[in-house]
Each structure stands twice: as C-alpha cells, then as structure tokens.
Image 1 (spheres, rainbow, N blue to C red):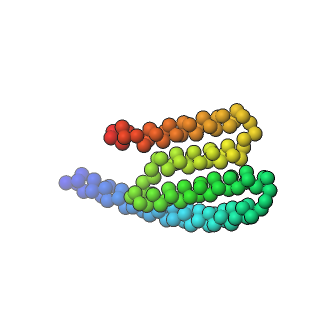
Image 2 (cartoon, rainbow, N blue to C red):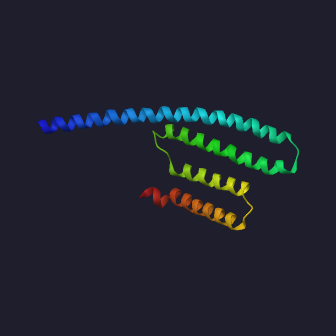
Image 3 (cartoon, rainbow, N blue to C red):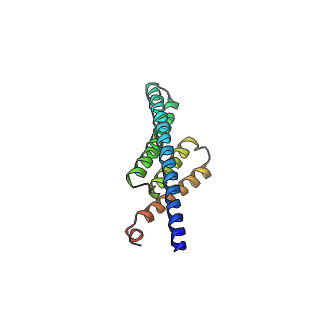
Length: 141
C-alpha cells in the first residue's frame, strides 16, 4: 500500500511540475508574440519608407523587407498554431520558416555563385522534407 501512495505522490508531483512549466512556456510565448508584433510594426513602417523612396537599390531592399515581413508573420503564425493545437509546434511550420530564411539569405547575399547554389540546395532539401512530413504515408504511421 505504501508503494501505491508513493507512486501517486510522484504522479501528482509530476503533474504539478509539468503544469507549472507549461504556464511558464505559455507566458513566455505570449511575451515573445508581443515583441514580434512590435517588430512587425517597425518593419511595416520601414517597408512603407522603402516603398516611398525611388532608387535602384530600393528594389532589392524592398524584396528583402518583404521576406523579413513574412518571417515575422510565420513566427507569429507558429505561436498561434501552438495555442490552437493544444500546445504543439507542427514541424512543417519550422520548415516554412527555414525556407523563407534561406530565400532571404539568397536575396541579401548573392555575390557568390557557389553559396547561392548551396543555399538553393538547402531549400530543395527542406522542400523534400516538407513533402515527406506532409505525405499521407507518414501521417498513417
């Protein structure tokens, strides 16, 4: 009988700790979401400034700003999805963020053909991983 009580105490203690850590994680993610919203607002202002300037360099800067804007959106969407899916981060959202980040890197740093080829190869690998994660075969297993 003592063993059963000990197991029940351990189980109760584990539930308390996991609940406490879940609360810490949730509060931290809400704070992070607030910070991301502030940066998204700053990026919106910066994007508007780039749109209003008329220069040749502004087109590359505009494309870079748009991709950064999507990165903020994807991180916010990831946080929203986390709360909607009962505290779970879907893997494919991380892959989307990785693909977007690599596209941004190609736009920003396209001076070396070898680096651009390697970055493109990493995007291809992430697209293949996305296909594998999204395939019906994998979902069934």
